Image (cartoon, helix red, strand yellow):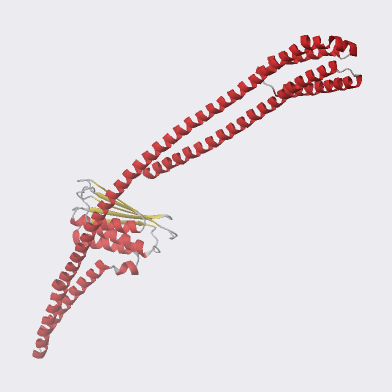
Length: 436
């Protein structure tokens, strides 16, 4: 039972560790993938928007230069319109970038928007110049105002781009740290799993060795038991043969001799001798019948089939008390006569063996036999006041036979005995659907 609990806990722990490692790995990988996709998507989005700003900034300088250098009023107005559209697109790009920027980009972004506002504020007066003013002031204005401001704003945009790239690098480092943590957890989990697996393998190997040794010991014990059973069977056959030869055979031989004498007495018409011989023949026949009856009862008590378990136990108690002088008390409480034959035979044989041991080996004076029945089981308790023994060292064929009978019916058998304190046998037999 303990081995089963250890194996269940051990293999359950292994499965739990494997399941935990798998679930944790899947969750971590999903989190890494989500984080990687988010970082990459945000970086690409901010990069696209920032490139729009840079592109619009370059294009605005080109449109403004063309506007200043264009002598025709219609074409100059076209360049002015394109410049204003570029400004609208740049403002939309700045609004889009503001919604996705990080806290680290706030300061350079504010500088960029301030520089752009100042840039457009600087360009606004020039958009109202006449063609003559554009020709006169155009190139110095581009050189001294527009190009330096554009260069400064492009530098700020480069700073923002550098911040974006650093954040992308930080995201990669975060994912690397997450992968490293996952690798460490997997290493620990795999180490624990391997360690627990080795412990379980060692435990299972040890238990298998123990079971193998126990199986070998049981096999040897069964072989010895089989040999002892064969010897007991031969002893029983020898005893029956001796009983038949010595008792029945001699008695019948004596009857034959007496019949021969009776025949001679009848021929001699000696009536007194005929009566005496008839009486002797009757006595010898009664003795032989008694011997045969006792042998039959020992082999299979007919009253167990005819009268039931309780009368058979009571008869057995009276016979043992008559032959040995040991006081035997039988207490059978509400024992059903509808018990299965195997149960009745088992109880009868156990009581028979116990009484035999109490008389022959324990030198008991009193034996108490108690049989109790409830809806689920049948309890048999046999207690004597004999000299007792050590059940761990001394267990003969009788007790082994009792244990085999009880085990065959799925019951339990216990022996409680100490030297000088008597012996108590307790048997529990399960009952299935037997009326009380």
